[in-house]
Length: 321
Ligand SMILES: [Zn+2]
Image (cartoon, rainbow, N blue to C red; front, side, top):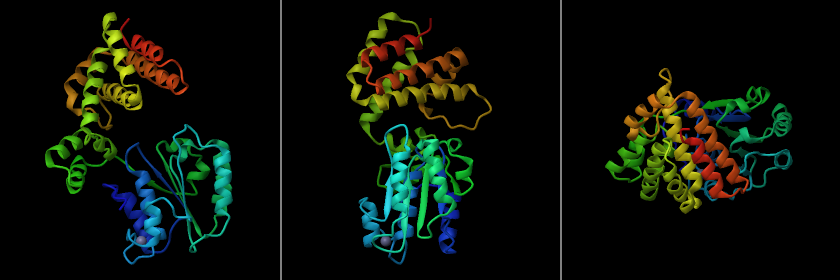
């Protein structure tokens, strides 16, 4: 249950703390998107609350309630929105100050704590300075720089990072995925488990192929093709989140290829030749314009702007002038 691939260092720190019964009051799990931080946070919550022998057993009442997200003493905060405001945090802090319902412990999990506003972070700080003995706070963040230093210094930090491709392949095979599919998905993952998992879906593979095809062509000026690209976006509007993510990963990869001295993994490894070619053709300036154009379009769509128009402006901005 709540299986996390790799991340041996983070696991070691937490497991040792459990063994020595020296849990920190607060943990901050940080690292790139898709590295299973929130899954590990739930593993930690289960390990702390489990009543079984081999913790987390996955079978006791506490474990089962955590799996079904109905444990009254495990509060999970997560949001699709861009920020977590002071109102949410205030309510949470009120809960922290009440007694546990079922046992003698409570766990608060805050997914994407880097979305908490500065005001919200400051109010958490007071709790971290005088933490209730029965409560463990577990936070995750992609961008640790958005977490106040005063909070970081009161948390045990656990760093998450991309893992070995072979570990992801083994993990998928163990889950019963066939060998060939596992190898392909792992190779595309850039060491990010959740990226690999996307490649288990045939619809995703097909959509990705189409998006990469458009991404690789749409930088070249061709006014007639613009309508075709825009139509593709409009036809797949319900999947626009995924499409934008693929577009960004493609251009991000070109930037990574251009930066010779970086250890950042390439996501779209299967089109490495095209990435190299494009990295020679497109300047940093142009790539930065393209990334901006995509981000702006995404932002406009989030704010309910006209979808077709937003995409059209984006494609025209991406094209060479
Ligand atoms: Zn259990």
